[in-house]
Structure formats: structure tokens, C-alpha cells
Length: 113
Image 1 (cartoon, helix red, strand yellow):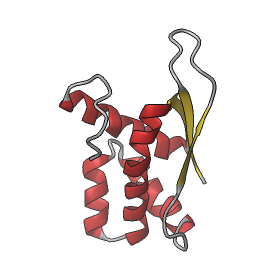
Image 2 (cartoon, one colour):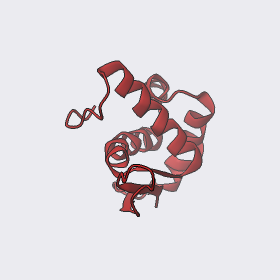
Image 3 (cartoon, helix red, strand yellow):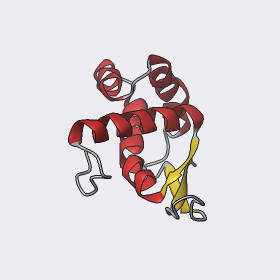
Image 4 (cartoon, helix red, strand yellow):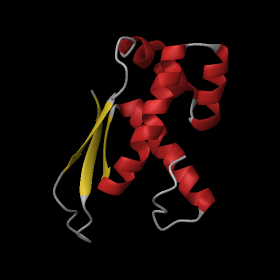
């Protein structure tokens, strides 16, 4: 787990938030969030897609430990794994967008390539 940014949360809150963000991102394929959060979920999402490429029982169990919904795990192993089978990495892209109106937070979009 990336340990560089605490995101203003305690460890258990941060892990739960990142798990949910990765689950929602893999389900939808595109997400708009703060740029910092997008940079934090990028390596976690890419690891889940790499597990989907392996397509073994051990990889599926490891993905089920992290992703919070079973239907998303099925999508990772049935759709995303084969889609990126020939790609060696770099399954996601994070781009900056305009600042949020309320508090001026730097926003970003993370999307699957």
C-alpha cells in the first residue's frame, strides 16, 4: 500500500476509502476525484488489473481481499484481464482538471486506457 500520503485520515479510514475508490473505479472505468486521491488509487487499481491478467485462483482470492464487491472482481477477471493481456502496464491515466468550486481543491480524472 502506498505510504506517502495520509490524506487527512487515520490508517483504517484511509484503507477503507482507497478500497472503495478502487472498487468504484474498476466498476465504472472512469472517476473524477481530487488529484491526490487519483494518484493514490492508480497503483492499487493497476495491481488489481495485473491480478486479473494472471487469472488464477490465488490471484482471484487476493483480489477478493481488496475489492469490496464480488461482481467487480468478476468484471476484472472476465473483461479487464483479457482486454489488457498484451499490455505490460500503464492501464490507467490521471489527468488534472479545474479546481473544485467550493474549496479550491485540485481535481483530477482517472480513467482506464
